[in-house]
Length: 254
Image (cartoon, rainbow, N blue to C red):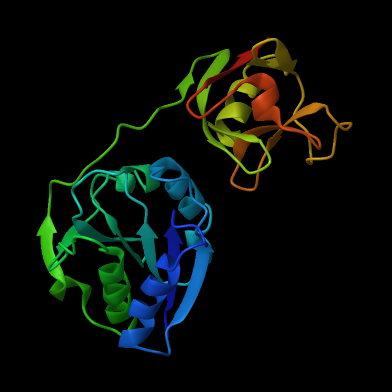
């Protein structure tokens, strides 16, 4: 039986998560539900996309994913698309482009998706049908016009990389969109010395682990997704540096 995962900004103090789970189990009580997170910041599509991108590849092919986070828009169209042979059910909010910038993604607008007060329950029903083997092309109609966001690109020159923070995690660590491969490519063209400019602070080495520096010291590391991450050992780097999402991060190669 395929796995159905569930991400939302519902929190855990009300009945909303259980109601969607009930809609999944009502169609098939043998469904296997994995709750990835229900602590997504309210209406924060970038947070939801970041969490999803960092975990979905670890699930087997054929898995079905519900991303029940909307950006408070009054348009509640529900869409279905595939990435890596997995199904994603979510709102037509632009989140697709935050998950995958591939413009050739095939998208289906689900029929009967105008449930006015709790459309997420319909997501649960559709997910259950997909997990039971229903052909996804029978669930709605293909569309070409779905919402997209422009990605913030990394700028690379011979001696500089300019990226942005894309996520501040639970520990106050700053995850950027600067990739290890790009860093190494520019580093190889220069002397091997560099500065990560963080306002009044600078980092000049890449650490091997999160505790490679002393307590309260800043560090830079390439995390398991090969994104540059900046943090403070046993502290909150974001608060110290005043860095939030979409803040520019520059690396100068010397």
